[in-house]
Amino acid sequence: MAMNWQVFKTRALTALVFVAVMLAGLFWNEWSFFILFSVIHWGCWIEYQKLVKRIDPSYANISSFHEYGVMLAGWSLMLYCAGDGYRVGNISLHAIGLIAGLVFAFALPIIEILFSKQFNLKHIGYSAMGLLYISLSWALMISIRSMDGLWISGKGSHFETGRIVPLVIIFSIWINDTMAYITGSFIGRTPFSKVSPKKTIEGTIGGAVLCVAVMGMLVYYMRLPVAHVCIIAGIAAILGTAGDLLESKLKRMANVKDSGRIMPGHGGFLDRFDSLLLATPVVWLYVMTIMK
Image 1: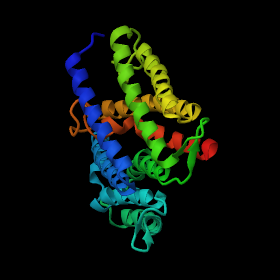
Image 2: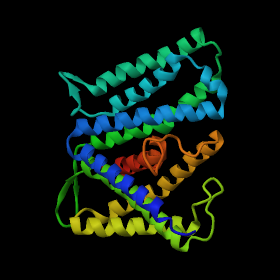
Image 3: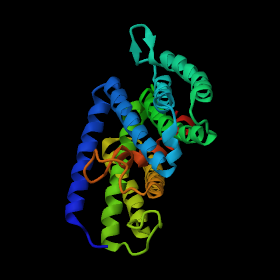
């Protein structure tokens, strides 16, 4: 597969903008991070529902309350996973999310049964899958950002888990995506999956190996815990690729090239953040069970 330099430049520029926005959201304060991922959450949901409607046109018959209520229910999960640092006056977002989540948990199925023109358990299933696929992932990202505590490297340096882990995930996925594209362009010969014909086994393996190696070298000189970062980088590379394939499968089923057009060279929200959607829950589990 020959290198398409114009495509590479477009993708690289968009990736740099993406990283800059994510860095701003991460380092400004916890609110900028929450707002950023709230926007991403809504963007992903809008595109997900459009894809499902193309895959199963009957999903277009769901009520407006169902369509937007499930998005709000997912956002309530993000509120619930926010820590004590997120407060409006004396009320925490965690409490607001809990109350709103309970309301939607009872209201959505009841209103769907009573007022839907065409009640269909399959439609509820599609929406439930969206909650797991999109909302749970971003809620766990907020949970990671809200974590208190320190990373202690072998050299005695201290780093806040909530600030570092999201950055490691984002950079790992970006490096894996870039390295897989470069490696696949130069030495890729064997197709990896029919779902995404342009991916090659050589590019996929090369991207993951180089991702771990590059992240390991970067954090070594930054005095971050190399072992933890390399493991997270490996998780991000493997699950990131799986997330990309899953979203490609959805697009193929919907017969579309991109989920949206908001990001030149990368398509829509789902096209850009599909890797994070699967990687984040597993990284969260690793942090909670091994690192915390």
